[in-house]
Image 1: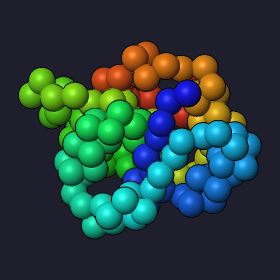
Image 2: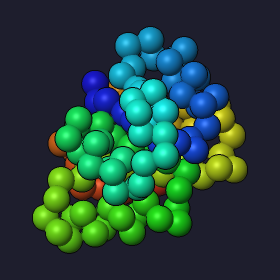
Image 3: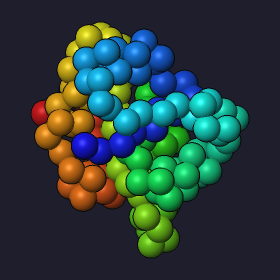
Length: 117
C-alpha cells in the first residue's frame, strides 16, 4: 500500500476517517513530522525523499511547485488534490480507492484531483 503525507491545512477529519476505514493506512501529517510551517517546496522535497503521496486542498500553489520540480528533473511522488467543498465521506472514499488500488509507481509524477473521473 502507498504511503501518504497530509499537508498543513488538510482536513484532519479526513485523515482520521481514513485511519478508521483502513486501519493499516500509512499516513502522517506535516505537523507530526516537524514541517508545520515549512514551504511547499520543503514539503514536496520531504514527500519525495520519503516516498509519500501528498494529500492537499491547495490548488493555488502546490500544482505549480510540483510542475517546477518535474521540470527541474526532481522526484515528485504524486499529489492528490481534494476540493475543500467535497464532503468528508466522499473524500475518504476517493482516497481509499487510491490507497487500495494504485501503486506508488502509477502515481509518481502525477497530480490527481478527486473525485476521480
